[in-house]
Image (cartoon, rainbow, N blue to C red; front, side, top):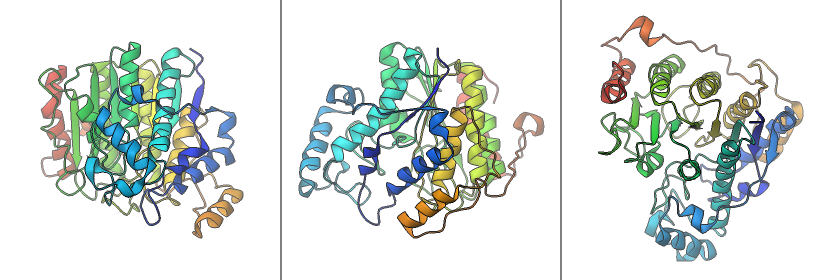
Length: 390
């Protein structure tokens, strides 16, 4: 295995554009790649563009009738009527929808294949992480589920076990559904409580199908969770399960919408905690998956202040060149941000926090704490299936 890191990028992924005023503004992808290059990370990791996923490959997860529907409205968006989740407020149809969605999926598939072949140890597709798409419908700004497709491809290639950790603020429902009854896949999702946030799923009692009990893990966090609680939950659930499951490959989704400035959710996490989570997941990939790590983007709608910094930190960590939080942002990049958005860019790679958390094993469970109640509910639901004490 080469040990090299890859960043999957094709400028055409910015064509994933639901139109003006939609939260999923593709400028967030462009600004992230500009920042990656501004820090010289394109010299520390190989930047590669993969081909778009073909219909047979998309069929690893998605139904043929759904693929036909996407292609139909992609050719003529006026035909979208809400069927298959296409033409809705969340997922408006646009010309070329199929082509660019297949291209984004192709980047995640190409990353998975490179890791499996030993051409890269780590790979990042921050345009991916479109985790809500179902086998037969679009949902939550997601047309094709590149995360599920990458996992399905790894299994097809011979991976014995794949672990998926989703730290987006929204439940990773589409990936969980795709592998609900497959014991070869462990899905772990930390998200804001389904009682208050889309998609309304991801309760701790959702633990997998009859053939895969304990393979679906859901940590439903209370609104307002801050850095310390979020990282406490991550460390209280994920490494224990990864150690027990011993995945062949670790796939992670890094939605940046947990941030306190994100307009679509209610957690209060900083860029500094998001960076700390990426560092931890990188370490766990080495500890439990032989270093094989595929990292994806996801949600994130504070498109200037948060998304580019969070995902540039992710790329830097994968490339073995982590950026110190206090590092100033290049002035050239800040000028490009203003030119593209007429917004002032942040000045440093930090929100000025030094996140810390209380270790679960050292401090134990506080029954009066809502965060601890959420963590314990998840541990009780799945830990015994893995031979672990809750």
